[in-house]
Amino acid sequence: MMSDERSASDGPSTQCVWGGEPDRTSEGATVMPIYHNVTFAYDDLDSWRKVGAGEESGHVYSRNSNPTVEVFEDKMQILEGAEAATSFATGMAAISNTLFTLLSPGDRIVAIKDTYGGTNKILNDVLPRFGIEVALCETDDPDALEDAIEQGCEVLYLESPTNPTLKVVDISRLAEAAHAENGTVVVDNTFATPINQHPLELGADLVVHSATKFLGGHSDAMGGVICGPRDLVDAVFHFREINGASLAPKPASLLTRGLKTLELRVLRHNENAQRIADFLSGHPLVNQVFYPGLSTHPNHDVARRQMSGFGGVLSFTLRGNFESVRHLLNALHRAHRAASLGSVSTLAGPPATTSHVELSPEERAAAGIPESLVRYSAGIENAEDLIADLEQALERVDAFLQTEDA
Ligand SMILES: *Cc1c(COP(=O)(O)O)cnc(C)c1O
Image (cartoon, rainbow, N blue to C red; front, side, top):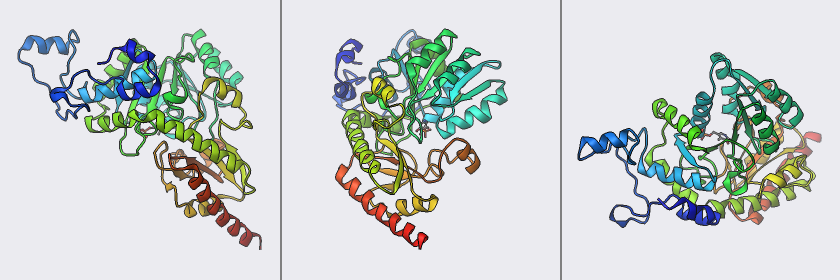
């Protein structure tokens, strides 16, 4: 593999293209081949034993490690500026394997309320069954989070920006509070990507990602990854080895290909989301726009301090109720009405069918997610086309609201 020192001083796109790529592949292939095999053979039992015991590098069985998967992990390790990385079949596998490795009965985890829907389910329904105390705090109340941390905190779990209302949490402030209690700080960096935000530099111990989103970037592969210090990553890796939620070689190869254009894509996602947020902010049918790049965002200062770009996802509320959302979404021609985010193509939907499909309407209301909210993941199309599309869709909403008023 490329030497870490050389990769660490490279710019982001050079890291995206060259980081973690092997110096030599079989037949001189310039793209890492897909090693589709389950098992790896040895000429003699001695070297097999040494690789199995971790005394020599190599691979034994693809649930544990695989050369194609390793390139994806090494690229992510370099991009997050971490000592180590390991991968998973999905983002939720990365999150659940991490939490089950770090937590034991009697432990306490402090987290923000606005976590990803699946994570929320683990925090609310699963961890308590294993005797783990879960303290969920208002995402935009750092004082409440600090108070909860002071009452005990084996793990602090954060996400920033959050889903779907793009709240921004002050990672360094909260990491400091958690470290004072000897807590391990985990940050879900899916929305920001390592192009826009480096949680490890801000004091986090572990970064988790759904690679399914921006990292892969094309909505054609699922995966998850964690990055951090060797001891923590190894502990989670050993749990994943037996838990079995391993990333397969084929999606790993797609994710690695996606990563090669990560910086190019994310810079365009950032630009498109900002232009669309600006456009929507001035539109009479739009009540509120949630985007950290807007100076009106309540945590714009924190976002500017800890992020170098504000990401490709925004959300907004419309005049009227869910019927306005239905009319807007049905009229869009340049957005898939689909779950997920971070794809080259624009994806839009209401939280009721996307990020918070796991929650009941009551739970969504309790989580402060309005029924007139639209989540919009700006793709890499041309901003003018996306804005024109939104403009004509908003005209349809206008026509609908006028018949309502009549
Ligand atoms: C999608 C997502 C996840 C879950 O990832 P999967 O790959 O779908 O399992 C976790 N966190 C965030 C912020 C996400 O957007």
